[in-house]
Length: 259
Image 1 (cartoon, helix red, strand yellow):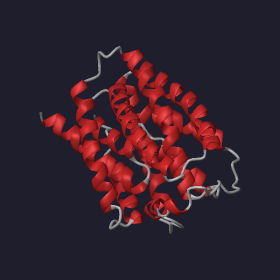
Image 2 (cartoon, helix red, strand yellow):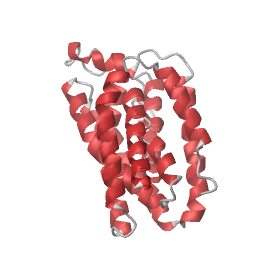
Image 3 (cartoon, one colour):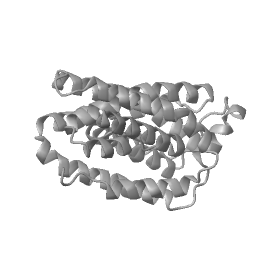
């Protein structure tokens, strides 16, 4: 029961972070779950299954507000799915005791990535972008430097398969390339559903369900669902930069190097 409560808390906190920053569900929940002693493969499967459910809800919202560019979603999803297959193949074939330090190092790098992203002034916060979308539903995607998008998506797919980290890799890349936040967050979140489906499906096929606890999956889903409306409310009051730096600090500190 204690473990299930911890998993539910992980889903709750991860969803809260993701709702506030537009990224961070996978790294936050993976970091907490790995510290409970779950195998890396079971952690990635649980996180990606939860991301499919939460991602579908996010996708619907972004579609409603016109935050999605279909062409960009495809350009992200295809290499992202290929990368996810590579990530889960490594995860399924490397012994847990050997892969844990590698995953810890990846989570630390993701923490640095988030820290860099939120240590600088933000041109437009996710909250402002989403609140203003009703006025811009028909606005087309502007010109931006899309060079390297497939490579970034492929790299994001690999890290998603390993530790559930898709947004922290892909979203900052698109923002740095000059893509407006509404299109970056909306398209990345939509493509993430396809990437998470491939990652979780591949891991389920390799695990055969033997290393997956349905109770843990449900606890993660319930925690995430409960946090979603709270995140939508508190995002109006929480400073994204401060929250981003805090999340990066937690990820950097709480690593399962000795688990």
